[in-house]
Image (cartoon, rainbow, N blue to C red):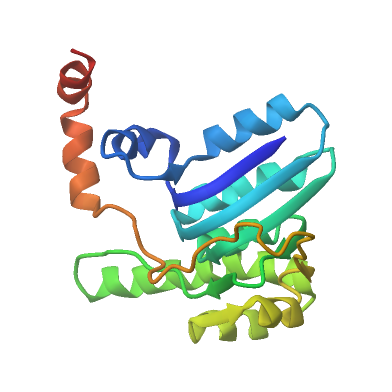
Length: 211
């Protein structure tokens, strides 16, 4: 069973908005459905994603880790941010042209200095939660994982293998096999203001596009 982790990683209740704008994305529900249909067969998971929502990435990571059948993860382009966590969920390889990127969790916040202090603490704890996946995969210390994240570390294929984040570099019998193109940005998520506005207009938009 082939499962694609491609495009932006978004929560289940926001996927429809990306569908309307025809923006490539993946949700936990899509991945969990594919995993259920695999019914113990090998999962081949292709990743080419700049990341996205942290909790959605964690949910996908957990679903893959819990799968009882064999899993092979293939980084066919980029595995950045939340997607790099998913790449650590099982045995993996990376295309020679692939990259990984790990960095600190980010968010938007407003309020007085108490609110900002609280937001900072939440982000630090979120970083530790993300780092746990790297620690589990590589055996590195939490301190080393957090340092990689703090420096927004970009890794080419060999670097990812050297750090232990990926198990091997993929080899191709046919050198003309298509490999993933490089990407210039790890972004892609719609601004939250757009998401919020679209959620308010959900039924109107559904009716419009259904006509």
